Image (cartoon, rainbow, N blue to C red; front, top):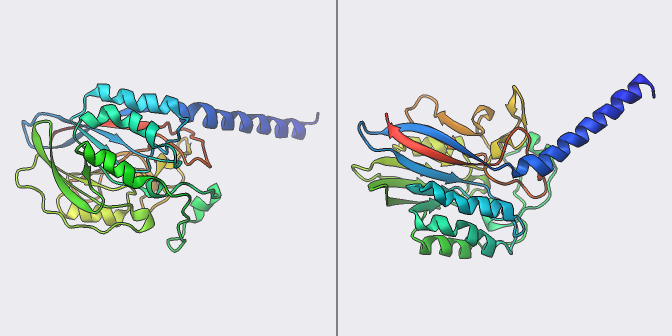
Length: 295
C-alpha cells in the first residue's frame, strides 16, 4: 500500500471511529452543568432552578428517561422546561414517567417546534445556509395538548405567550414566556413583573435576539432558552459551528451576560438530538442547575 493509500485508509478509520463515538457514546453521556447567577438582592437566600430542554424523547430511550427521573434528587426550588420534548407520537407515557418526580416541584414551560410536530429528515448542511424565509417542514402531529394538560394539572405555568407568578423557594417569582419563535408562534404578551418579586425570568425555546431584547427591556434578570443543542457538533478551539437561529455562535450554550445589559442568558445544550442526526461531538447532552445568588 502506497503512502497516499495509507493516508486515505487512515482518514476513513479515524472518521468512522469519530462517528461511532459521536453517535453511540457521547450522545448518551448525560451531564449536569452548574452555574451561579448573581441576580438576587443582597442577603437573599440562593434559589435553585433546574433547566431542562430539547429532550427529543422517543419511547425506547430508557437510559435518558431514567436519568431525567433521577434529577428530582437535586431538590430544585423551580423547574423550567424550554421545549422540544417529544420525537415521536407514541412517547407521551414514557415522557410522563420521566417527568413525574419533577412535577412535585414548582415549574413552568414553553413548547418548541418538536412538541407540535415530529421531525422530518433534512440535510445537516442546510444549517449552514439558513434562510429566514425557508418554510418550516412539519412531520407527524405530536400529542402536545395532552402534554400541556399533564404539566398544567401538576400546577406548572404554561408560558406560551403568557406571563405568570409562581411561589418557589418561599419567594414570589415573576415569569414571562413566548411560544417557539423558530416557527413564528411567538406573540410577546407584555410583562409587568410583580412588585417585590425575588427574580424576573424570561423563557423561550429558541433564543432569538429580538425576543431576548424584549424580555430584557421589560426587566427580566435571567432568560432561559434551548434549541441550539449547543451546536451539537463543536470543533475544539472553535466551538459551535451553527446555532440554527439568530444567536451568535459564541453564546450557543452556557451562561452569558446579555450585551450592554445587567441581564443574563442561559442556553441549554439540551439532552437530545434530532432523530435524523443522532450525533454529538464535544457537546455532551446536558441539564443545568442554575443557583441564583445575590448580586
